[in-house]
Length: 208
Ligand code: GRF
Image (cartoon, rainbow, N blue to C red; front, top):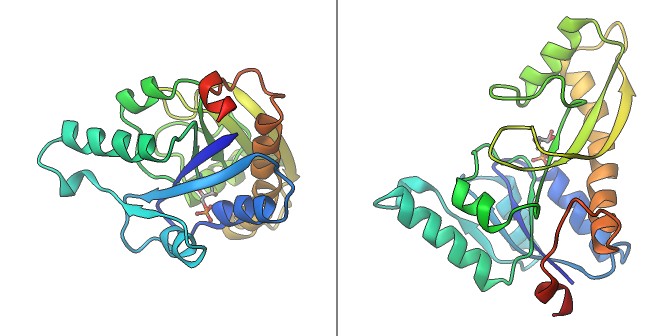
């Protein structure tokens, strides 16, 4: 069984696509157990609440030290028996203790074809601006494992879209977002089926 914790900072459309796939029964064995955001006004928290899911606003600003913030995050994750962390527009780098505790059990989606157009500063509109400026005729989306370095972990699935001559960052972002909503649920479906060996869900959790 997959017990998923979703992290996000913004509107939550990828989270919604995952939730829809789960609710339609197309990802057997997967459950979203909680949603965590660093941003109290994030749409992703609102979506979680609408669906009756635990929604946590957790920001380091609310804690006396980084250590206590990370302790709290880990406690929340453990309280939901989390065995897969899904980053869906989460704008913060995860602390190494969290990455260490969930090694090869954290995935992210990036709105371009990694390894190009990734790394620090490559988020949101900046990604699509860089793609258009490069003149490449193809962009896309990438789902990858999260490790200590931005956008570096093993690539699990990519899908391409055409970049048209008249594209603006906004039109390209919309085309990419459509395929994000296809490939993120698809990767989670494959993980739930045990088809992605790079993602290593702990055996104890698989039995629960
Ligand atoms: C997506 O474009 C995703 O690729 C990136 O952040 C954005 C999140 O959008 N990591 P949403 O909150 O899922 O709508």
